[in-house]
Image (cartoon, rainbow, N blue to C red):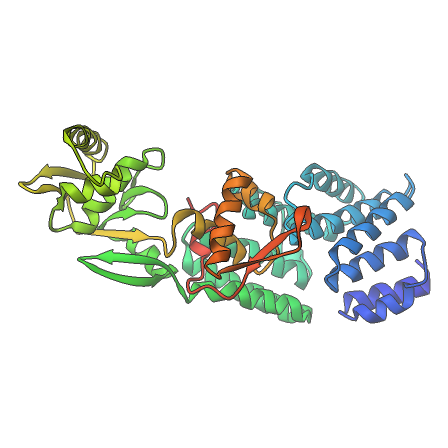
Length: 402
């Protein structure tokens, strides 16, 4: 590397993006194109940055495999930031393999962190944790160490290990400050905010309360019988009965749990589970059948008894609580992803939520009419973001917490 390129690289590493650009703006050799691409990415022009990095990768010959791998690594990070989740992750793994074989441990670790963050975003927690196990935190430079602890905090949050998440974010903050990168410090601070704000609604004994993530963790660890509407499950201690594939049964269970310690009227159950405004005998017969199924399914934790006016939930032990989303399910999922402040395409949202793009588009249109999100651009270039900060930080709702 010549002196000009070395000076540009040092300026870029120190956060002086404009200084780096001034040194290589008029050069078109592959190394200069790569530096310009990274600089443009830091300035927010991601489309131009990707174009420059692709040109740089093509410009490096077969004998410059490490330089090409570094370009692919930068392109992968841009794809992650721009939420281009269809970007082929095999290219990142191939680049990582080259970097490991050639002894570039720092950039190989960077590849693992990028891959872990992508897996975390997609809810693939086991894969994200596997990437982290390949790293030795004590050997990482401050910037990469901050990224490592951010992923670790994300895993802990999604697994409801709040104390561990706080410790991880403290480590991330300390590493970010040592790196001297203002943007990284701000990212860690933003990641810490949801831990202190309400993430869900708790309905207990007829009272509804907004609770924070640590209160959710305490609730699920308590002896209470919890109808968990964020996961469509019934929980008590370490026992979890999933009803995610039985929406009618969970709708009935939720009505019963919200009515506890009283009973739920048959009319309320019919209207909620079957959307029957004018119930007839066939609806009542179906209700009896579904109640029998529900009773059999939740027998390890509770019973359902008939009353003169309806049905009542009878826990084997403890009291009953309902953990609910602050928004409707689909809207909450979409708002949870948009809460990261990045621009999302409807296709990327659909990929993460494992649903159709059309379903996501309908939800986005409803949220746009409600003034919660805004569209930027048109056609295939259209992206979505939150209009304002949500009333509920939605860390709990992110994929992988199910």
